[in-house]
Length: 128
Image (cartoon, rainbow, N blue to C red; front, side, top):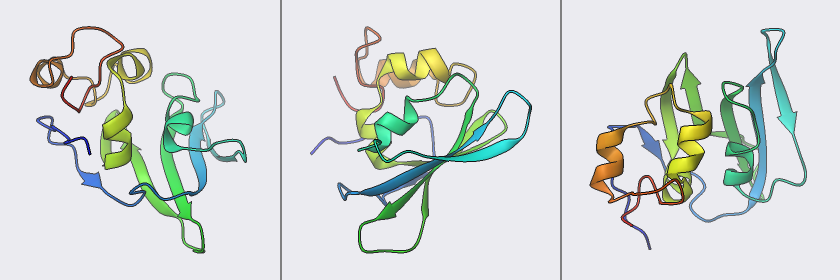
């Protein structure tokens, strides 16, 4: 089990916790409004997290198998991530953040130093 190192002070949740289920995303389209996207091929939260262009992804919701409730596992407010699930933090790479979330509070050079990240392929919130 990977220990999360979060010196950025991001608010975390632990809703996914290795469970399977369905995902949906709230994204901002070029026209400026938000829409919901569901895709049956998303097998894990990282495929949703990395599946959109810079600035589009606003929220990821997760519905565990056997439940009818959608749980927010990632949420943005303006340019700040206000909630992120531990499953994302365990798997997110420096390159994921640098390519799509460079102008948010996920991007933090001190955070990268704290986990000994040297390249874009390194983990951003788990010790390398």
